[in-house]
Length: 91
Image (cartoon, one colour):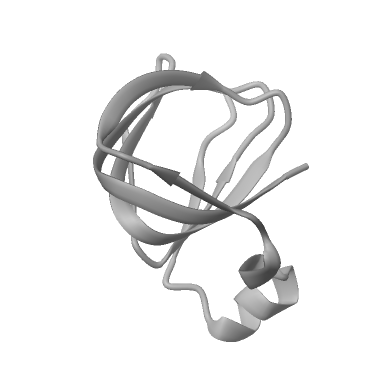
């Protein structure tokens, strides 16, 4: 099973190299919902506190300042504990 990769506090150079600050922004209020990924998603969290639990896997905590990569084919449950604001890119 593929896992969620989380990079805590990536450097501004890393974010610039990825072009992360130019990606669209997604926001979400506190909620719980299932999600699945048809393609990989990379996102940089500007705000929020989230626990993402892959089906059959261990919960992963993601929050403000984290860069996360979700693999294609993964199904999971999102538990947004504090409203999220993130840059994201699919593919």
